[in-house]
Amino acid sequence: MTQQERQRIAAGLADGLSYAEIARRLDRPTSTVSREVGRNGGPGGYRPQQAHQATSRRARRGTPAFPHTAGPPVGRPVGAAGEEIVELAVRSGMPRMTARVHVDLLLSEDGRRTAAELTRRLKVSPASVSVAVNSLVDQGYVRRERDPRRRRDVYVVDDEAWYHSVVISARQTLEAARVATAGAETVGPDEPAEQRMARAGAFLERVALDLMESADRWRPLLS
Image (tube, rainbow, N blue to C red; front, side, top):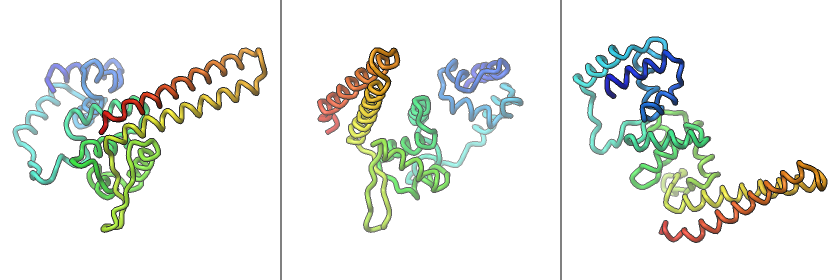
């Protein structure tokens, strides 16, 4: 991060901007801005010059390199691409922990992790990992396999996961369409609410069916 960017962060904090807004103006991930501020005095004590000097000192001292077999630093997605994926998922409504688990699986060499591995890599509690992976399994992003040798579950993300997640989302939208249509029938004919819910039901049903048809049509691209 440049000194000019740090000055813009300080100006944004002084103006009461959120980390997300500052990051947007810098074209940086929100997590980058929050870490920068957090390790350099916090929102009330951030000073761009001191932050720049402190970073330079840390760079000169250097940090211990991870062994080649150790993989990326524990608890962080691999590179800027990983951070961008996490932030995109969070902006789309996915809880941050769920997004971190998903990205760690996506960027793993074989797309496989045990709950213990996720707990160790992300430095979070087993309960947090359990909630995250259960959500990902429910949404079709991840599947659960049993490793008979180690007697534990393994969580897997592969190309087919994208197909299943789209289909699950489409089915949920189709269910919402049916609820809206049923709700319209209970309101009574010629009522504004009935017409509004009927239109919503018809729209959601058409979108859901089109999405399922499209997923089936393009599924071979994942093979």
